[in-house]
Image 1: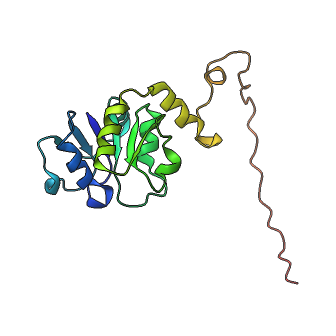
Image 2: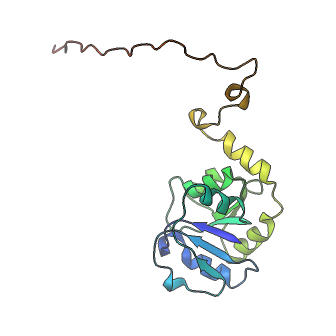
Image 3: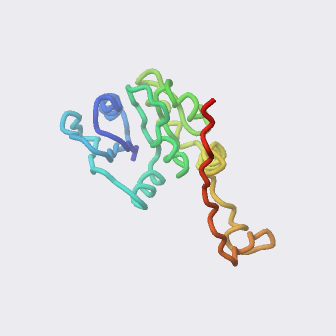
Length: 178
């Protein structure tokens, strides 16, 4: 199946998904809030909002995540989330997608309906391990996973904090009014 995760609205590109559904040999599964009735199609299934482990499994098992937004996304968390699961993203070619998706490595960016069909077909040939590794490497350092050698023992394990330290107390400074 092809996945969509987000608000079910024209602004998020559901019209494009409906056009793709006419040509896709894979069913398209939508998860999110909103009324899917205007985009009813025999190849589109709406399942409602999804969270937690079920959300990760949904993304991980999809052939690709579709991100056809009409809105110029400043970030597009669903694309990053899918790539962290190793799932390729087929998206528009503007906004955050130009920096988030590496063409032919983590997914494909599209301009025309034919681009969408070609990107979806080619998505199955992308290496999911490389997609996930690329996504993790692009995370800010504070959000990167802790190496397992630091979590489960080993010579490089961080020492336990045996004594509790009292927090520093903030002492207000006088305000310089000159």
